[in-house]
Length: 349
Image (cartoon, rainbow, N blue to C red; front, side, top):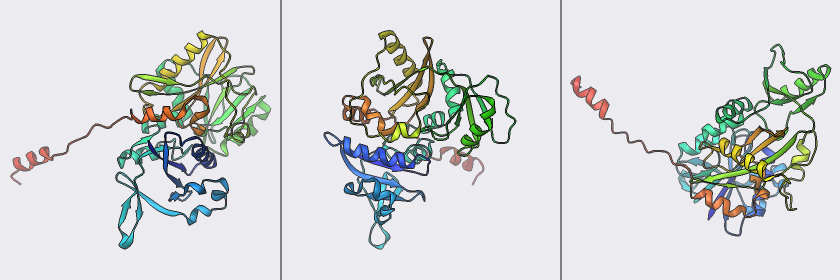
């Protein structure tokens, strides 16, 4: 199978996306050939990156600007040829690896659909619901999945949190633990809010519970069957920060399945399936759950997880190959102007 990877984007998670793409370059190759690496920079310019340049320093030194610029258009990406003509690149299936803005907020999903580009990743509706933590709460409730109590606060609004500290404060539309702060008591609330508001005009505040269990589960749906990863229990810390998550991003050691009961495993599987539903078809997502007193809560949905959560699957390439056979298709709409012709005929025009 041929696959092209798009990464970068205008986002606080821009660098994480680069690391994800580099990781994919190292992980794929047995059955999946990566034909093109497409980089979206901070100016929203697309660049075609040679595989031998898929190194972090190539981007941090801005050397990528020497690469060939390409443009998006109907059916894929184009390179500019002689006399201004454009030649379509045979990019094949596209893997959306842009975390945060552009990739997970639905901007590129809408663009890919508009230009009829086949891609693995969340569609527009799925992106909107999972990128915004407040909308995720609404969606989970509709799916019958529990979430922790929460309070949403916009910049310059009066703060009237309906529950007692400690709190965990998060920007509403950010991932990767960026801007996340734990507030032990009300005296430190202002500082915690300042940290979160540095990245967003709206924050979400939840009660912070020490000793709560956390489990990560990734998966996808191919036709009517789910492909689920092993269940991971992250390193035990009150809060996994940015460094904890990403400095060991391209982990090489084997991830061990969480030591939990068969009953809890089945319950986590069922909660994941409720969230994935049909809206995330065409994507591989990771759901992070909390478990407290035998009750399961959805923490967040990662519609484009770091490194595609490849480390949670024993045969990651086969998962991508199977997703490629089951991408959602839009219904074709035939426009024949029959209605307008009838009106013109009736008016004698």
